[in-house]
Length: 402
Ligand code: GCO
Ligand code: MG
Image (cartoon, rainbow, N blue to C red; front, side):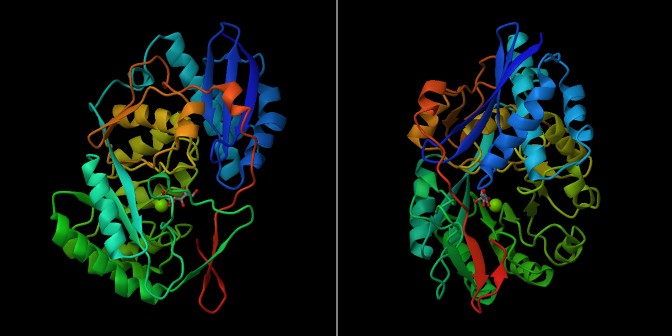
């Protein structure tokens, strides 16, 4: 079965998505997500201009060989753009292989290790009482795990807090908007949120929190300690993780479980974190970490070190990524939780999918392949619209992490 054509489809049904469609001479096609929030067109060009011409005529079934060809063969290894492009091709090829075998993808990945994939949703509000109302809404929908974020008194905007609620969209401007941040205000306020939530909802639900890379190791240790009484499922992205050693200090000072990895694009970004047991959950996902082939390796490596998966699943990862991730989540042994930020109706219509939500779990469905398709005609109705994530500054005006 030879690759005959590769399409790169850019569409904006409420937000931008880049999708690769690989066609074969057997009439079977596969699709993969190639969306890199705020840098979508760079990946589209990488695929159209540099990857597609090399793959026409190649054997579609040689997934590992094509992965290595694109990784080793480009000379310039890794990086978000390259690894997102490789991920899209890899996902599309797994889709083709599973369709050719007439099997849902999880069967090719080792079969089911679990019946359903526990997901967490985002409860975010401008203050503690609004966040509490949002948590209650997720509980009504059956969620077992909920991430809680709240506005900080004295700061006019805070990451993770948006107007859209259920359809939270962080890319909010055609040029980057600017947020203001104060770590000291955050550190004083955040335990109050979880104190209130535990008081109101008890300890039977899983609560998560994302610090969005805004702390130093010492501050992260302090936040981890202050949240220990509230028994969090995890505390995410405390410090930027370019410096993997930084996690040693956090680890020594708190038993709050640590999660990191949504911006990682290869196993080399988390090798030390995993092998030294410095984290509890690795959050890399299919679209940004080299596809099914590479993410499976990361998760298997993590399983040797008591680290579980917790894949990123924000709105900017398309339903194609979600579908593929659910098959991997279903098959691996060391699954932890899957993030699930719902897509809008318009997005869901462009990407018809087999996965379904019930009572806090997602199910990948039994359609051959990863179970997600693209309606190209509908996609063509929504041309690309430039959109950026915000940037973030400290109160004195200096640049900080978003
Ligand atoms: C999360 C994230 C998102 C990201 C976004 C970037 O945990 O879901 O931190 O809110 O910021 O996906 O593109
Ligand atoms: Mg995050």
